[in-house]
Amino acid sequence: MAQIPPKPWPTGKAEQAEPLVRRILAPNPSPYTFTGTQTYVVGSEGDVAVIDPGPNDEDHLQAIMDTIGVDRLVAIMCTHTHRDHSPAAKPLAEWTGAPVVGCAPLVLEADGPRADEAFDTTYEPDRVLADGEAMTGTGWTLRAVHTPGHTSNHLCFALEESGALFTGDHVMGWSTSVVIPPDGDMGDYMKSLDKLYARAGEGGDRIYYSAHGAPIEKPRQLVRGMIGHRRQRENQIVRLLGEGPKSAADFVPLMYKGLDPKLHGAARMSVTAHLLDLERRGQVNRSGDIWQTI
Image: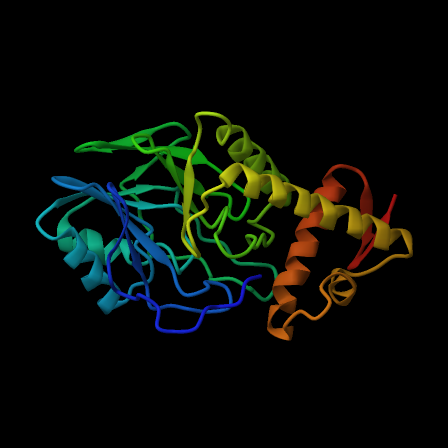
């Protein structure tokens, strides 16, 4: 996990990422959001779309409106419904009349202390995009790519005119994604990584713009590394279980040496996600909170 860079950060200021893409940083930094959520405005003139409007923060909403300017907002698009991504969708829709388009609604309670942002209960989409469906505007096309795993309703959006992919939290520019059961699913997450790896081949996605962290200019290389990292963690869990039965919490000091104690909950839930995936594949089982190999 990368260190948060020193301030000042460009909060509330539109930055031109490429001709069709502007980026606005929300004022919500944390150990799980890095310097904050990055909202993207797609389109250079006429019709524009907003991707991941972010938290319901008055200053951030005003920064989005200032960036849109005289253009017409035709879609408010959300990759998923964690509270650092979608709450601004409702007030932005009320201000502009634009429809909320993208992921399906989802409201779930976790089965333990949450380590990431909770789900947004105010999210009400006007249109849910299935895998491969698109929104279009003046000079741009955003096509949905279904990528469950971090959450079951997670979407990425491909900007067909430039080869950019907006990856939300599935692939980030500063850290691996947190996968927290019961909604987060490690098996789905790995399948989605495989899907993005295939897309990023020759002539595929050129660059990733994630909700947190720097642009990813070598996406296939990063995704390959992420797949390898998760397989390494899985193998580590199986090896440690070979030494004897363990609870999910037992793995954390063995696998995440030197980790900030504030992040132990996230690490435990990540281990749990791996264990549940291994259980589904018939490699481990459990009795109560104790896991063992079969």
